[in-house]
Structure formats: C-alpha cells, structure tokens
Image 1: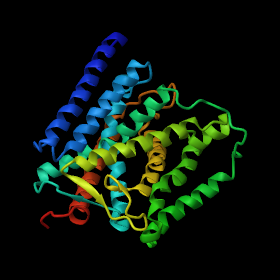
Image 2 (image 1 turned 90 degrees about the vertical axis):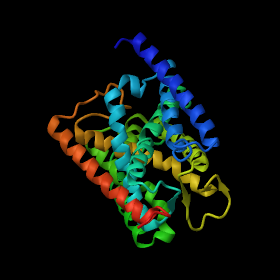
Image 3 (image 1 turned 120 degrees about the vertical axis):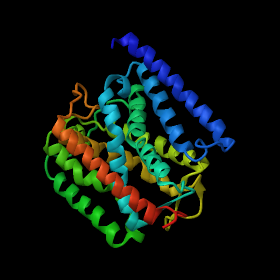
Image 4 (image 1 turned 180 degrees about the horizontal axis):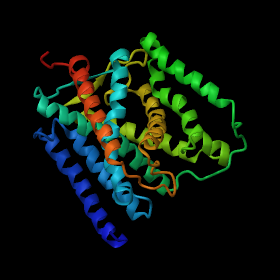
Length: 322
C-alpha cells in the first residue's frame, strides 16, 4: 500500500476512532449496553485509532499504518503483560473489580479487550510525544560507566520482586519497578534497545522521558474512563490517604510513569524472543513469527489467559457467583 492510500485509510480510521469515543460516551451516559458496562474499552480503542491517525498525519512512524503486524501482535502480548501484574495483585490486593457481567462468555472477552489496550495505548501515546518533539536529544554531562550498574540493577530487581511478596502492605509500590531493574541489564547484554544503553552510549534520556510522560497521560485516561464505566475497578491501597482523583488515590498516580517504562523494557525482551525488534528502534524490521514459534506463542497466550481470567474471577472480582 502506497503512502497516499495509507493516508486515506489512516484518516478514515482516525475519524472512526473519534466517532467511537463520542458515540460510546453518549450511550454510556444513557446507560445503554454494552456501552455502559464496557465504556472503558470503547473509549480506549477509539483513542488508539485517533492517536495513530494523528501521528501518521504529523509525519511520524504510525504503528498501525507502518508496522501493522506488530500492532496487532501487541494485543495478546498486552494481555499477558497485564495478567502478570494481576498475579501480583493476588498478593498485594491493591484493586478489585465490580459490576462485571455474570456471564463468563461476556466477561472473559471483556477482560481481553480491556487488557489488550495497555501496550497499544502506552506506545501510541509515546509515539505522539516523540512526534511532537516535546523532549530534545540533549546530551547529558553525566554518563554511567558501561559496567557495574548491572549488578545493582539485578539486586534491586530481586528485592523489588521479593519484598512485595513477603510484606505486601509496606512494599506494594515496588511491583512497578521489578522488570525495569530485572530486565534492563539483560536487554543491554543482548544488544537490544536499552534505556541505560541510550544513556551510556549517547548520553541522552529522551526515550525515558517520553515514556514517563506517556505513562502519566495514560494513567489519567485510565482513571478517567474507568470512573465513568459500569464495569470498573476500585482501589484498596494502604497508606495513600483518602484524597482521590476519580477512583485512584492521588499518590497512586506516581506509579503510572514507571509502569510505562516497565512495559517498554519487557516488550524489548519479548520482541527479541520471537525474533523481531522493538518497533521504536529506528530501522527495525517487522519480523514474522515462523509457524512453529507462532503456535507455541498462541498456545501460551491462551493458557495464560484462561488461568489469569479464572484467578481474577475467583479472587479479584466482587459479586460474582462462586
């Protein structure tokens, strides 16, 4: 497909995304199903299409138009990533779901569609921040040494993993940094795109700043759209006070920027495992999964989703018949 054809398709999808947001908002206000219960998912998918079209229009690298296969591959990876944090929540017990449909055949696809927006939403927003040129590639005076930091990262990653499991009431915030410290040295060692590598080699933290801002923006949208949805989550976070913006205690918003960084680091390694590169790496190819690897990947996603959705039903969701 040539650039002009992509431009027309992108414009159409962007208009559709905006319309989806507006229509779902109007029907949510009137409590028309499924827009009331699943307003969060309608809003996010509309946003993703609209932002992708905006990035393409501004001349940036659009995920949907320029790296289509990877865009669609993000959906199941996004679900798996989020379910990892749902497993941690079984121990730290920071959030619960309410007003979910009693029918499994409606509830489980709803889980999938909602969780599938996490990575596309974050990465589309990061792409928009990059395209707008909000952060410049300014060389920093201080650069860490090429060695030595890895040991500290591994140590911190281990502590961030263990402490929330042993003392969840006091160390629950560390969950949002586990994979930053645990996987970043691995990415660097394997020659993948690494945030620390960008700092060490080029002396810049541009991508890191873009991810922090994208996480903050998406965190606000997550909470905003969740607040008005029928099926939603609520928080049971200790020590953060009673001052809330939507459902989230205001201090909880500090977790969204590192979460975006964490997702980036995780995705960088996962893309290497299947044989491709991260799509934000300039000049990266859009790698195909060979049939055998694709079958293994699909079987893992299905099995992990079944396990994760079952555990959410039995431990995190409120009001479901057991």
